[in-house]
Length: 319
Image (tube, rainbow, N blue to C red; front, top):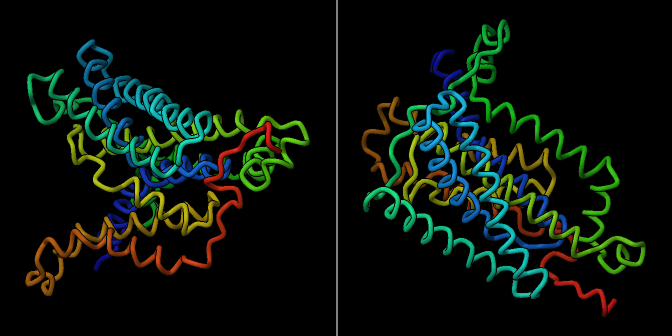
């Protein structure tokens, strides 16, 4: 493998891991507040759908290069609204959080496909976006061998995701807001005693997870596929949850895990370069990211300590 191919593989790794980074960061906000969010997959689906619809109508209205940014904003809004359904069910009505998240996944899969067929005369996918995000080269840095083309020639969403990893880490571990959010996920009664509104903080955590997961879904639509269909997300939300767990609910760790899973997806595009791969069925090659997800989760059992109050509804009247 020459240096050019190595740089391209590094670039593909970042492309595939960007959506996972957004979604994993979203999961961290929710679960650090004590709310299990299995619905990341559904929230990404909502985001991918909203980005496709928003981007399509924005470019149709003549907004040009602003269309993908409008699509991204639509994804953030719809992702937040979708997360509110989960928040109301699991926080206010104290429903089982795993079941509530699963319902979000089914709701997103069914409702988005229905809306696509309704809006586009029964078509199974949205029209292709002519105005999607394009890769941006950072002057001088993009000329560095291997890492220049691999890291500094990326989509805007990739740069945003990397910056957000640092921002989320600082917010969670260096600010009063982050301390309160982690407190309600570890010891909600103690946090309540100190004047922290536990359920309000959990609402904020879940809503932030919806915004970030929506951005993750939008990234796929606006960079790689250019359209939305029923299989646009195809398990990326669950891989993001695995990255969050493997990263021990830490933004830096989740970034590393997301990059690992992104590499496992990128390698599918390059396996065909080797002669020995000709005899391997394509189905086995496409299984690689999902098999690695299972292996990583199994290896993480007993090593990753979840927030102590994760999945436990809180009733302020019974503290």
